[in-house]
Image (spheres, rainbow, N blue to C red):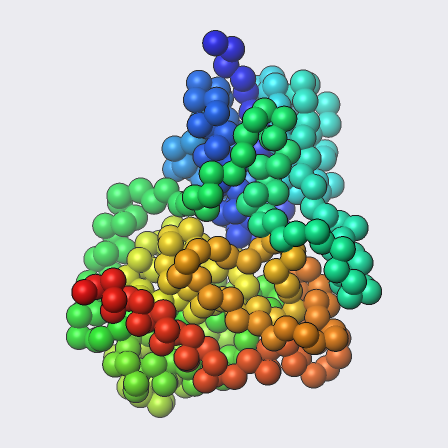
Length: 355
């Protein structure tokens, strides 16, 4: 059997895209079990795939090394003599790495750019159907007879991380509480963030009505933002009801900690995709983005809450730093009571499964 050498490149955008690429890695490995399958990503996101059983090697790019780092990485890729390169994003950086490395074939992803542009700019929906991004990544491999397996994204977490996080969680004595709820209030762009005060109000209601413990997750950049939410919940309840893990856990540690949550509530963010990959019951709140872009989480225990029918939505496929219309209706019209009720529904499913 010929052992093909594959290279998949994701070296831009957020870590959610890497999580969404894991089904591609899985079906490619299943089709060609003896081949070398490698992955390129930024150093800060490498932990999400470096333990993936479907990969042989993860090439890392440190953005602090600039053009010199790209040149060195390109030299390494050329030396591997890949038969096939799958360029997930088609950015300038990834095209630079692809050009001239001697690959027999280079495949790119159909990002539906024309349909996306028309929907954002003119609010005309030219999408024939809604195809999840994880399936779009696999479309380019249809020529090899490869199809989505329907299993969704996955994460491979080493035992040492699982044990370490279990130790941290043990100190919280979660058995004292009826439910444990995870909140992921952050997102890179403002128009994808449900107002922080509503996250706080939601937390208070869950504590009072469901005897809940609240765990807050986020990146170091979101510490100040999430701290406001944690402090407000403490003011309305008490200090033992909230543990703010923002900036304290790595991405895989966050995934491991989510395992202890009955329900996760998240904006459209990378942490939403991590919760989905961990097969958690999930309430996903969408503002300026829509289903057609393909980034909606899937699953029988996943509920997406959005305000449909707004004349201004979507205003962007990735989010904006402020609302172009200055009213932010896409998020402000989603009331705390609606999210609370949705969480209650998912908690009811938890109770049924525990019987």
